[in-house]
Amino acid sequence: MDHFLYRNGTLHAEDVAIPAIAEAVGTPFYVYSAATLTRHWRLFDEALSPLPHLVCFAVKSNSNLAVLRLLGSLGAGMDVVSGGEYRRALAAGVPGDRIVFSGVGKTADEMRLALTHGIRQFNVESEPELLALSAVAASMGATAPITLRVNPDVDAKTHEKISTGKSENKFGIPIAKARAVYALAASLPGIEVVGVDVHIGSQLTDLAPFAEAYAKVADLTRILRADGHDIRRLDLGGGLGIPYTRSNEVPPLPSDYGAMVKRVVGDLGCEIVIEPGRLISGNAGLLVSSVIYLKQGEGRDFLILDAAMNDLVRPAMYGAHHDIVPVVEPEPGTETAPQDVVGPVCETGDTFAKARALPALAAGALVAFRSAGAYGAVMASEYNTRPLIPEVLVQGDQFAVIRARPTFDEILSRDTIPEWL
Ligand code: LLP
Image (cartoon, rainbow, N blue to C red; front, side):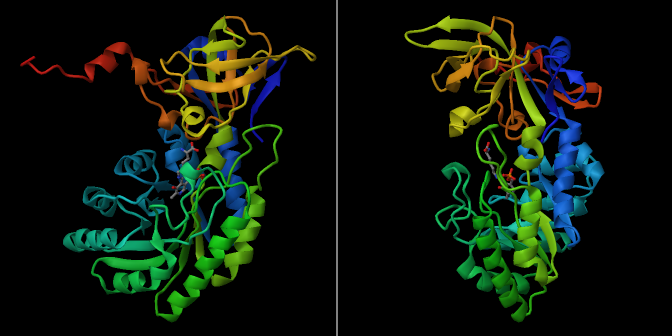
C-alpha cells in the first residue's frame, strides 16, 4: 500500500497534488511519502516482535538525510556500506550503536571512522578484512564488534545482477569455511564476535530461499556455540521484494517474512537484525516527469520525456519495469496506444518502456513512475550534464525540497582547468 492516489482526477502524494509540486520545483523530480516510509518500517518492526530485534534501513536504497532522519526518529537502525553512508546516518542523528556496516571492501579509513564514532557491528566478509579490522582496532585500543557474513550457496532466484548468496558471487565467507574463520576471529586482538550475518539478494518474491539460508545459519549458530562462541545476534540481511506492477502476483508481506523468521531461527534466543531497503523506500517514491514531445516513428510512437536513464537507471541497467501513469487521471474507457517511453539521453538504452499502453498525452503533460523511491535518486548521475533532479518529501498537506536541483554554475564549478592548459 502507498499514499499516491488519484483524488478528483489528479494524482496526489498524501494530501498534496503532484502538479502543485511540479509548479514549485519544476520537472523532473522525485517525491517521497513520509506516511508510506513510516508504515513500511513499522510493518517490519511489528513483524519481528516480540523477538528482540532492530530493523536497520538499507541506506543504499535511499540515502537522503531527511528520509534517514524520519526513519531514525521512529527507532530505525541503519545498514551502511561506505564511509559516506555512515556519515549520512550520523548526520541524520542516528547513533553509532544503531548502525551496522556491510560491504566487501571496507577500507582502513572507513573502519577507523566507525570505531571512532561508534558502531553496532561490522559485517565482515573475508579473512583479509578480518585481519585488517583487527589491526585497525588494536592500533586504536578499541574493540570491533563483528559478525561474519556467510555465503550459504543458496539461489535467491532473482535478477542475476542483484543475487548475492551463491558461491560464485563475491559476497561473504563460504559457509563450509565459517568455523575456521570464527576460530581465527576469536584469537585476534581488537575483535569481539557477536553474531552471524547473511544476505542472499534483493527483490526476492518467494520466502523459500530466505528460509533455506536462515536454516543454514541456524545450524551454523548451534555449531559455533558448541565451539564456544557467544553468538547472540543474527543479521538476516534485506531483500524482500515489492510489487512493481499492479497486476502481477503479490510478493510475501513483512508479516509473512516475520513469521518465517520466527519459525526458522526464533528458538535460538538471538537478537535479530534485518536490513530492508527496497520494501521500505521503493513504493514510497515517485519520479515525476513531463512530456517534451510525442514523436511518430517508423511503425511506433515515442513518448519523449524530460527524465532520462541518468535520473532512473533501473530500466536501462536491469530491464526493470516501472509502472508509468498520467498525473491527470484518464476518464474511464479512454483509449490507449502502445508507446515507447524514452528520455533525451543520446543512446538507445535510454528507454524506460517499450510499447507501453498509455493514453494520448500532449507536450507538457505530467507522468509519474511508480515504485521509484528505492535505487532511484541514489543511482542517478549527471550523464549528458543533466543536473541531478530534486527530491521532495511530503507529509500530510506539507511538502519540502529535501535536495535542491544544482545550478549549472554549481555543476561547472566542480571542474577545474589546470593553469598550464
Ligand atoms: N543488505 C545488504 C548487504 C545488501 O547488499 C542490500 C542490497 C540490502 C541489505 C538491501 O536489499 P533490499 O532490501 O533493498 O532488497 N540497485 C539494485 C538493487 C541492489 C541491491 C544491493 N544490495 C536495484 O535497483 O534493483
